[in-house]
Image 1 (cartoon, rainbow, N blue to C red):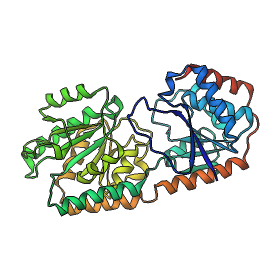
Image 2 (image 1 turned 180 degrees about the vertical axis):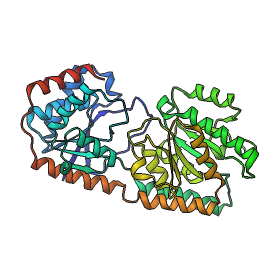
Image 3 (image 1 turned 90 degrees about the vertical axis):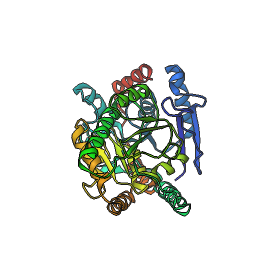
Image 4 (image 1 turned 30 degrees about the vertical axis):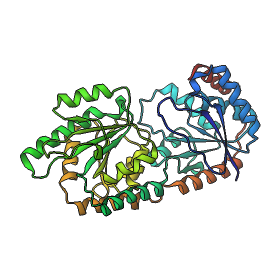
Length: 391
C-alpha cells in the first residue's frame, strides 16, 4: 500500500539527529525548520489538519496518546470518521498511573480501530485500556538489524586485519537525563573496580558512555568523587588503560553511522534506566552481537533478554546486583561472551523492519474493516482542549 508520512518537526528538540530520506515514502513536515513546539498551538493545529486532509488517507497511524500532534490527529480522525491505528510503546508500569487520566486515555483507545505495539507488556496495557486483543499487532519498536550487524562486523574484521586489539569496555548510549540512572551505573563501575582489586586478576573494564545532556557535568563530578578517571573521547582516541581502575570515557553525541565502531569494540552493553517505554539501543546492541545488561523497568526487557542466555536484567535501584552482573561479564572468557552475543543476534533477528512492516500492514487492514462510529462530541472537545494546551 502507498504510505505517506506527516512529520511534526523538522528537527528534534532532544537529539541532533540528521534525517535521512526514506525511499518510497512521501514525507511532509508541519514545522520543517525546527521543533514543533516553536509553533503556537493554533498554528500547529491548523497546519496538521490541513496536511491530514490533503493526504486523503484510507487509514492513519498515530504515535501514542500524548502530545499535541497525537491529540490533533485523533480529533481529526474522529471528526472525519477516518479509521486510526494507535501506535504505542507504553506499559502499565512505566509511569505512575492516575485513575482519571487512564479513564480519559481509554476513551481515545475506544476510538481507535487497531493498535500497533512494541511487545508483550505493551499489548497487555492496551488490553487494559479496552482494545480487543484481536486488534492488537506487534512491531512498533525495531531497528535496522542488518545495518548494525554488518557495520559492527566490518569494524571487527578491519581491526583484526590491521592487528588492532582493544581492551573490551562496557558501552551505554543515552541522553544524560535523570531517568537513565547513570549515577548508579557509575556506582556499579566503581564497585567493579573495588572487586577486581581484591578478588580477581581480570582488570576492570572502562565504561564508554555515548551521548550528552543536561546532567553531563553532574556525572563528571560524581565519577570524580568515586575515584573514576574521566576521559573525553572514544576508546580508540584515549590512552590504553593501565589496568588499575575502570575509567569513564565520554565521546559525546554521535550520528548513527558512527555507532557501529563503538558496538564493535564493546564487550557488553548496559542500559540502566529507572523507566523506559522500550529502549531501542538494546536492539542495536543485540544486532551488533553483544551480551546485554538491561534494567527490568525497560519495556524491551521482557521480550529481548533471556537470563544467562544473552544477558541479564536487574532492578535499576540495586547497585550491588548491577555490579555483580558487570563482574560476571568482564570475568567470563571471551568465547563465552561471544556465545552470549551470538544468542543476542538470534533473539533479535525477528525484530527488524519486516516486523514493523508486517505488523503495520495487518493493523491497517484491521482498521479499515473496523471503522469506528463517530466519537462523542465531548471526547472530540477534550482532544481539542488538550491539543491547544500541550506542546
